[in-house]
Amino acid sequence: MIFMELYRTKISDIDPSSPIRTVRLKDGRTIRKVVDKSIIKRGRKSDIRSYVQIFLLTITLWIGIDFYLFVSGLEKGVVTYRPPGVEGFLPISSLMSLRYYLLTGVLSHVHPAGFFILVAAIMVSMLMKKGFCSWICPVGFISESMHQLGNKIFGRSFRLPRFLDVALRPVKYLLLAFFLVTISMLSVSQLGQFLNSDYNKVADIKLYFFFVHISDFSLTVIGILIVLSVLYENFWCRYACPYGALLGLTSLFSPMKVRRIEESCIDCGKCAEVCPSLLPVDKLDQVNSAECTGCYSCVEACPIRDTLKFSVSSGSKGLSQRRYGILMLALFFGIIGLAMISGFWTTSITGREYLYLFRKIGALGHSF
Ligand code: SF4
Ligand code: SF4
Image (cartoon, rainbow, N blue to C red; front, side):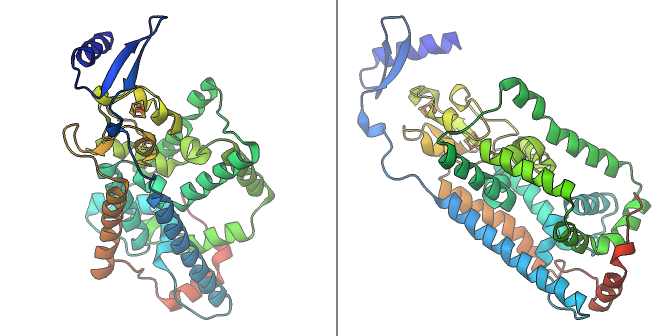
């Protein structure tokens, strides 16, 4: 690193055409100064990610309303439209379905939409970092919005002490490990038994009733998480979400990542300042971390053109936020679209079966 600093200083000092000069201060420190203002970015920062988040939250609310009408219908003994997208809220069942598919090559038709949503999220993270978390996930968006509200109320952002941050960060990986180990211990027949069980068939309705008749304890836990999310940026995503932990691990394979061009970096630190994952972007050549959500905050904050980019290699052109969003949504909804076209999107549970299971839903439990 010291060698690089000397090398960089030398290059910019002897090259009069360089748009950036290294200046030595009286106290011996060196700073990087822009001498050619044409390399400074112009124009407004892109808000495209916020629009995508609002759009996807609207779709989620729509699914929620449809599902509410579906359950209300069952209460009256009528079967109405059930939105398959609701299965996106059954990640454990989807993970079991994925393992069952990997072991047997057979796709469970109980909650196939949940399976495809999980596969689409994993594919996105394997190719484009954890973009699902900062662009698509409604929980991530709500958590982000609550923090912005907190910033407005308190006029500042809070940060946990470093020791607590380090101690809490593994929690989501431990939760993920618990689910993965539990699922991996099940045999193929046990997986199949669970996936086809009455409990799994109505797991979405059970989840609905969990929130409708929420216990005081659960309400307190959610209340605490809301307060913590208002105070600390991405609290839920950063410390507690096992789904995000899974996508973070798969995102380590992503060829696309944030890369910094050291030659034109002026060491202003703005990229690190805005990073919601608290990554030292200004010190890295490329961001390999499993915590990077592809949010583009750092790329947008960098004042020097083409210095921080989201790209597949350091030599290749960076992807603009808009193009990244389009590509990621195309990949995510492309997988879902394929499932719809090929007829694998909707559940095999019939209306008559729903009515039958709904009548005894209180007595249904799982065996694992
Ligand atoms: S600010 Fe940059 S490094 Fe930090 S999470 Fe967002 S894209 Fe990744
Ligand atoms: S924002 Fe980061 S990458 Fe851009 S010039 Fe400043 S320190 Fe360098």
